[in-house]
Length: 267
Image (cartoon, rainbow, N blue to C red; front, side, top):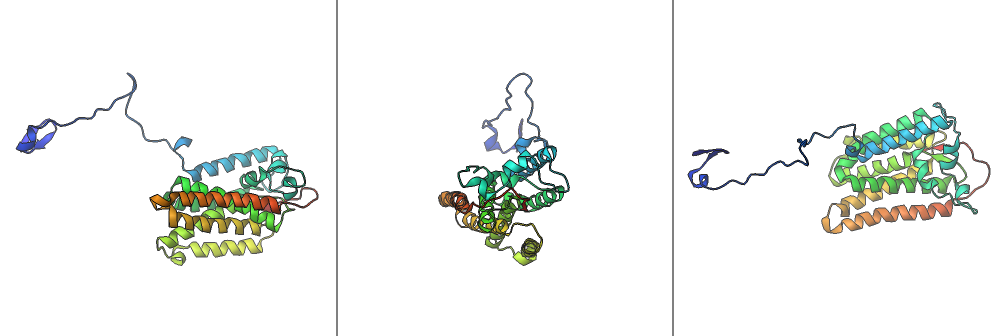
């Protein structure tokens, strides 16, 4: 072995020149890159960004009149909740199909939803990637709106649970495709608990939860069946886009009802 400036090398290799790559900065004060800061939103996951947006919107609601205990009032609530009559009969407030999913009725409501999103989102997002995860979340959000409008179009509905149920449904499909035991992993017991909660607690939107869950199950199947195959990824994204479009279109068909804006259903 022959000693060289870059370490010990064999005699045959010692005469060869070693390519050296240099660190180049962008000015006299350039330095090595620092680790990403956890306080920099540009480094956050989609799950973290969604939680941050929901919390900021809820603080806006509180400043606008919503109480921590759950008194629904204020401009943001009145103009953002899902309410069929405000999207039909000559009214065109279609943004409610999206904004309802970022509004919450109380500190307990948003706390429970964001805790659920934190657990299921952190499990699903790294498994399928940001793009598919975001597409599943928003397609389930629109499907949750469809379910709520199909069941109770004349009731105000708000909350992120429809989208969260979609993430949960997709997580079940991914776990199933990767042969992770659903019962032993705790996914099915949690799903059963949430269904019992949905069916027994007053004020919870059954249609919204079912719509989001079904969209998530289909979306998870699309990702595991097509999204993980490079030549078929367009089918997965196209299918998720189709879920969102169909949910919006059918939601507008089911929108209707009359009367003053009532207190809402929690999603």
